[in-house]
Image (tube, rainbow, N blue to C red; front, top):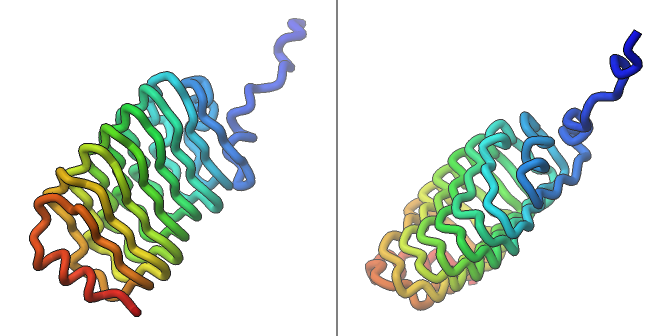
Length: 199
């Protein structure tokens, strides 16, 4: 009999344990994490383009999501992700957009120093436990946070001279609010968001 019949399978299944700390540096790493539903943490650091569609079923990141630094990744989308710990998207040279269609809650969100970014879309995000910072993302035009109700700590959106759309219509409370250099966003919207600061 062929001895190869009992060869152990590739490590796709272990990658998908709830305790998995997944690091994506190449496309083979993405394929190894395909189909994961719940993991401990996800880190994306790479110098090559990645197709992240194999992560389309991911629903829960119990710990942190860290994206960056990267070169070549032009779009970040985790369409089924519902909750995460600290989300950090920083220093991604070619990233144009980040979309989290079903993300409902996160401990913190930091999106900073992504020079090519034009859109940040989190339409279902209702609660951020600690801080939410969106700062110095070169070409940012759209920030969609239309379901956000509370931010436990500081809310900072700053240094986006091309910003045209800021969706924060449901915000009720933030620990503090800093809105600076918000481009063409209507002054009434800026004032309304600032009025939600707790202090």
